[in-house]
Image (cartoon, rainbow, N blue to C red; front, side):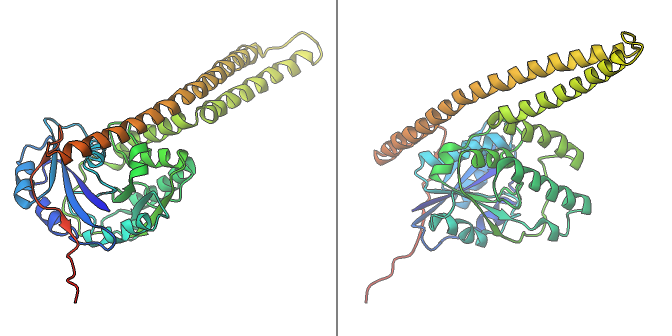
Length: 345
């Protein structure tokens, strides 16, 4: 059983040594542990330092592409490197390395495909009351949209098995945390939670500037992901609301029109707006129907993508067995961390 711990990095030369030192070298049930750094266009020599520290593999972007792209590139590389389980953690040492063993335990027990570390955000001291409140509301919203049981939906500390890695991909350029959970719920992947504590804060978040900025960027991500997997429910609900509003205005006009003296009504605006809303509802309903047809094609494309990833992993395994290096992945030659052998008496 091979575990790869992937760490997306952007100018993390200052924090990477502590994060790397905190990673577990041995986990019960895991035969090999390797560390993969995804350098998202760093300019401070993060990749060079990672190689000096003994990181096993490095994927480097020539320019910054964002957290979501770095996460997906890491998953693709981990599959090609033969990972059975991938753990994602942050380079700023927010998440404790000793908790990785607890994180992978449900996957080793084959009771979950994805396990998310629950930071218990209501207990984090540097989170403001408004941030704690929004974290709770946002997680409840994503649980409802995705149909999963994940408590801390924005946590980036998570473990995934090969089945989950092969299925998940990210459309947005902002973050992977919410979109992948919505995908997981709609693709039948089993999720689980593990309660963790967090280390002391080392720096401010680079993902967003403020809470309003975070909401403005994450709100469309949730809506787009839900609309992608549930187009009929999303646009169908809008069509029903438009039709109901239009019907109410038309009814208002008819009541006034049929009230003596019959044929006289000053509510012509209700007629005009009502007809417009009813016509618009039929247009949106047609969009819902077309979206559902497109969703069928998307499911077929996802199956092809999953098969393509699986075949790519097999070909990469053959290349590694022949002593070849993988494209876009720099392996440093550091020995994997293995469970020490016990000599027989």
